[in-house]
Image 1 (cartoon, helix red, strand yellow):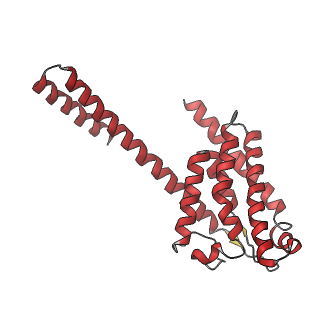
Image 2: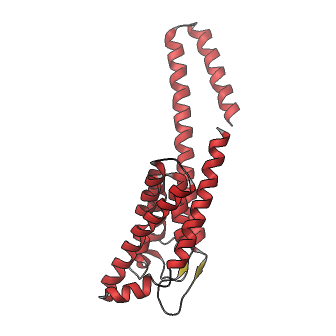
Image 3: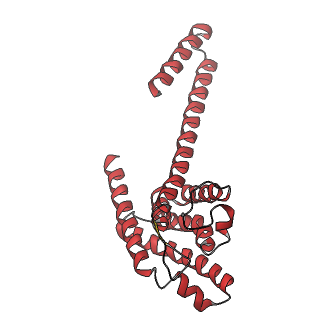
Length: 217
């Protein structure tokens, strides 16, 4: 596709040269067309990455284990959110998770399957966690962008992101239950160990990803 586009631009350049000679106006026109084509291709690529990232989180949401003592399930969603932020950075990470929430709100089956689905799930027990996702991805990406992209920085970024995640999730649970104690019982104690593992997993994948990208440059 790229070679075809280059060939078309080359043909256009030849045609312009034949028509106008080597005038500077013809050269500027060709350069403008080439720049617009490259800009359009880059925009399409970035949109595809954002959409793909939102679908990756949706795939992670399918890996969910209901727990009998809490309405909040154990899910791989949080790992997906952290990884998207760590790999894509703050802006694209936020965009991907905002798109993910929009997809779920209009009824697409992207949320964990144990919930009510659609917009109602945003108002349920896991609503606070879900609504925090764009900010979790943004903050994890922001911290990752502010230094050398090492495992330690990725783990720190994941930890900071998790603080935002549980602040949103527990805050909403406290509103629903009218009890901070109940909110912690439902949304925190059973998940701490699993979340540490998710942070380490996301940091490990992000570290390897950025190492390979750096080596290939």
